[in-house]
Amino acid sequence: MRRSTGLLLVSVLGLSATACGSGNPATPSAGAGGAKAVTITVACQPAKSAPKERQAWDDDVATFMKAHPGVTVKSTDQQPCFDPKTFGPKLAGGQMETVFVVPVTNYDDVISQGQALDITQYTGTIKNWNDLRPDVRELVTKDGKVYGVPNVHYGVGLVYNRALFTKAGLDPDTPPKTWAEVREAAKKIAALGPGYVGYGEYSGGNTGGWHFTQAIYGRGGSILTPDNKKAAFNSPEGKAVLQNLHDMRWVDNSMGNKLLVGWESLMMAMGSGKVGMMLGAPDVVTDVVNKFKGNVADYGITGFPEAKASLSGGEAFMINPKATPEEAKAGLEWIDFRYNTVGKGRFDFARGKAIGNPVGVPDNAVYGDSATGKAIQADREKNASLPVTNYAPYVQAAATIPPKAEPVHAQELYAILDVVMSGVLSRKDASVDQLLADAETKANSMLAAKG
Picture 1 (spheres, rainbow, N blue to C red):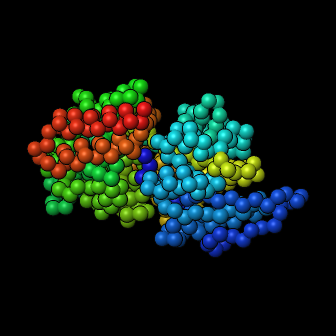
Picture 2 (cartoon, one colour):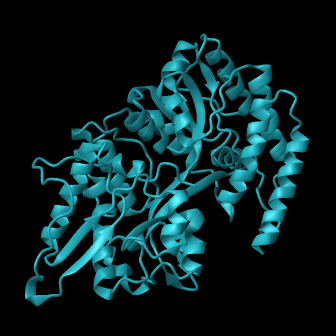
Picture 3 (spheres, one colour):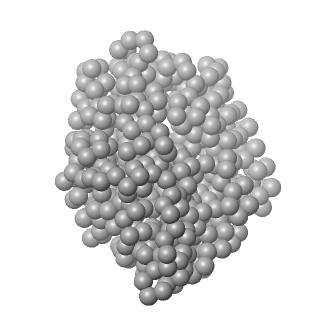
């Protein structure tokens, strides 16, 4: 699940010295040598409410078209790029762009339903294809055929407000490593006064179940049995997650008294500067700063407490199966330019810094420690607009924590687990055992129906 899809992309954008105007460009004439003119539609243009990022995108479109005579790029500005409410109907109705984004939880469904083009013969168009992490490439591969270009890969850690740590008498350079330490830090932050929340958590909008999954993975538990046929979260690890939240909420009073439902709710609270900690990937910092007006210098991220595994997620770009060979090639050339070239497009960190975006957050490990990955990180650090040391604990921890993918039928399971999270955070007398048992019954019924 990727709540910030699209927002992550704009975090590294920038504005070129000369503006090229917004909107879709005019269709050019046939390319050099009489090549057939091609028009492609592409997802993820930043919204009008982010004018600098949108202008940077439009500049990139103009640069790309100049380098590819005969190709017209038309942009879709839906933000976030992936919207669970519209994705299914849009896909089923054949309304997807030539180039569209798919979260990792939907890879199998899209591929198995024939809604993504087999691009095996075109992967050479992505110049750094072999530098993409093999495990990430494997996720878009089925039966030896490739169906997408990995675009984002992330692992979950503990995001925290360094300024609040200092204010509460905690050392921001030694963030919590255990849940007991998280609990103690949360109490001290909440004690700062009314409105301060030591630890923030979701309870609905599928984000509650998503965060429950993050927490149970960290403790070594699972959401499903290995064969994906039965629920596995009614376990000692699942009970530990809920009991810890119950005690922080009702015994320590360190979680505030407002239920946070949608993705925006906790991000907004974090941006207000009054929430001490939350689970999240590094792009949380980018979103909190860009979207919710947080002070970029205030935030840091560290490894997941006591992690036995960390939920990993991401997204890939796929090509509409209706695309002609010419459209598919042009679409992949766009993906290569915009999303996979060091120093260009989303990796133009100098441009991002120039327009005031937070640069320096290690928010995408899709290239790992390959030559391309190292070049990207070096350029990110060179143009950093924030202290990269704030994220060093996360980088160090992430290298040692095994990644674990989201479960199949993730959205349906998250909706069921929302009820569990809401129950423990809204009712002091809620029975952890009963909440998990009820959710287990519902999950098993859903899984049986799915076959």
